[in-house]
Image (tube, helix red, strand yellow):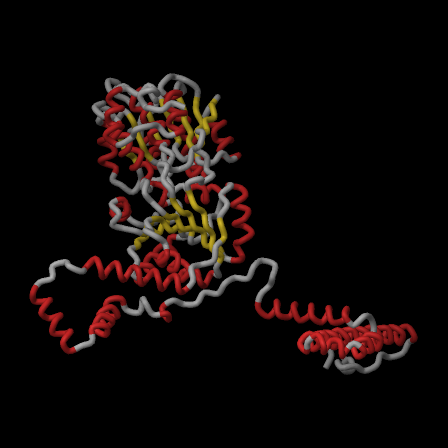
Length: 546
């Protein structure tokens, strides 16, 4: 593998821009793709998960091979979401250095006038979402006759989001003499079929070390009941060290509800989903990137364009609906060679389906018990202590110092500090503020009344077996061995006698029912009327029994 961008054949202007961005050496996917794209060749299918540097892998060659003197669209990059499209466009803009290539960003939810102006000014590279790109194609504002490069970034997600027809229409509009690149975190049968449709002959590139095994990610799973998921999440957030990450929900309404819940509990959290306006989405993402926001609750689609390399945690509050979703969510952390933690909250009813997802993805999670109440209380105390100590010594004006001395003269110091802490932190340090969480029973062991009933039946059965057979023989054996049992210990003897009695009673009831059934059959075939039982005689109308 090449060890520098210069050795890969990257030109001087782009090298300086990469150096200014802090890019010192290529990632595995970059080292595999860049040399192939810098020279004309076959189409490429690249398998690389989020955070491996695939934007630079196709962006650097496109910037180097596009000609600023040609006033036509030479490269088109398609992304599944507007956030990802904005990220790709910004990244490519920052890597071109002194090259005077014009980039146009096309996505829905924004005004058309600025996009039309960008196309009319002679854009060389277009980055956009399939729906908006198709709108400009059909209106005649975008022409792809001179297209040299077509990039489908995160193609698996575009197919999952229902863009297949749009993609087919865009591919048909593109010039035939183009080089096509597809990037996907997974290589499913659907992706293979799409690759065969959009590309004639392609080379499969799977970068060494660029798999989705999550070697830099610590993967944990906590099994909780659905009613306890919010409190379980609070415990995890309280005990997590330096939490800075994403929490994934399945529905937009759940995003709003959970974000509001966490904010009310004192966490620095906000939500992100597709129903938010574009300015609101950009504002939230800006706060996250600047680390003014610690927790972002989001849906899968909304989180596609998040480009933050320092996220330390990803929490799957709702279980992913597919293996691809689990792979993409896990790829949000431990990016650019860093480490991270991925956590899944699963209910007992989801356990078997989650194990199937683990086998399909190879992302095996360590099962752990939730942090207990003592751990949560200790974490809250540590947080309170740090908060108080950070404020000590900051602007101690004489007026406040004098007031403090007056208070200490009339009040006990410990009571005074305790009152101030209670006023500042509320009930956070009280044990009653940490609700109990029921622990699901291990699979196959049963729980509650059913489990108790099974254990009682088991005791009865063992007592029957211990009796040594039927009726009197077993009873005689127990009586004759009574002294020995009492010599061993009264509790063992009582247990055996109790189990034996239950076993004998069960056997007696069974024999009684069998004899009753046999007698009824005999009377039936002999033409006799059945004996009147507990249910009484049949009604003359035959409508039922008393």
